[in-house]
Image (cartoon, rainbow, N blue to C red; front, side, top):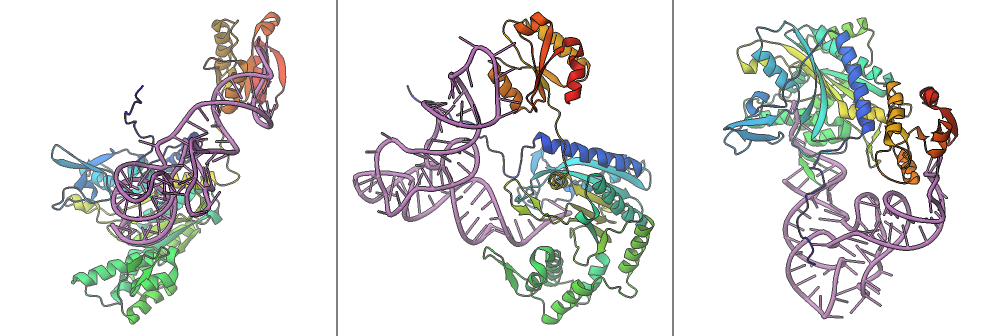
Length: 455
RNA sequence: GCAGCAGUAGCUCAGUUGGUUAGAGCACUAGUUUGUGGAACUAGGGGUCGGUGGUUCGAAUCCACCCUGCUGUACCA
């Protein structure tokens, strides 16, 4: 016989995509229900936008390339490039621009949705993940910014995190900009501009590589653990000193700087809300593209283990900030806005590992099947249980009692019901508690009540 | 993208300086127990040793190229 050489489909998943099992999904449901509760309480409306957008609508452009910028998943449909959304903020800006005349000002909406990023995954970092997003559109009032932090904190608390588990780092882009101005870079030249960008990027990495690493990146460059070398911004010694000073003393007030006023006002509002789990952190940078004012980042303060048991330090599980120019990209609309996002999969993953956190799936009570008994009799018992809202099933297969018991054990069933010839004669059933192993003979009529005692 | 490391059973891995039919644990199937799971014991199934080419009497083992993954780093709205 010739062996069938047909090529079989791969059972592997594409890079960066994962199967999610019940435990994770149940916790995710729990997180989502907390989010909805908080959002209703804070007066946000629920919105959904599609997974795909025109590529240029979400801030990706295709110069003369075959494909849109890397980072997004895209395809060409009828000569138009479509991309899967990579966040929920850009689609919101598009939505606001499209419906500008109809929506209330300010417009408060929240959204839960999957987003996709076509980039290299890492520990705790996937190419498909669920994001939560809350935004205040159409107001420049800093109470909006403050309230977003307060609400994020309330969500985390509801999900079981304590104050010591996380902190919201806040900063203001205007302050960082002011300090970089002191370097006297020539922003009109390409090198000046790229130096400025390198500085933002370097500052942002202080968490991982420390002040020393940042200084290296500001200067000649830095070699990482694997021996790979990253080119630096090539700043002069005196310029580096200024940035160092900013990172070390940046929490100190600066005279007459607009960004500081704003942070102070936000702090005032925080204290009215009795919210104090935050810290002014000069190294917070966030995305370079669109933030214009106050920015915030939610940092988890405990180590999280991944599926391989490695401790993963998530940089942040969420963040956001003010983006006053994003909506105006779509037309002549002046529309300030501020928003916050939380990566739900990361949050779920983190709270899954809190020891005291335990959500257990409800497993069905199982009725074993004996050949000599008609199926109708089992269905009668089953219906009684299901009418009493007891999760239950008849052994979904064919097999010996042993096999049936092994199945019940494997699915973590709390109990099995045995009804064979002996029981039929008595007109009763055996209820076996699978946790304790104990069996008792009970009347069919009182079966539901007896089971409820076990559950 | 760059760098380092790694690919042997469903999973985790062993496989000695190249040497017969490639191993273990877990998992799976069957039996010991034809009406009883989580324990034990017995037996069994399951591998193009990531791929291709080369060296050799002989390759999981050595060489070359390719593919894939992991980790770090870069980019990251």
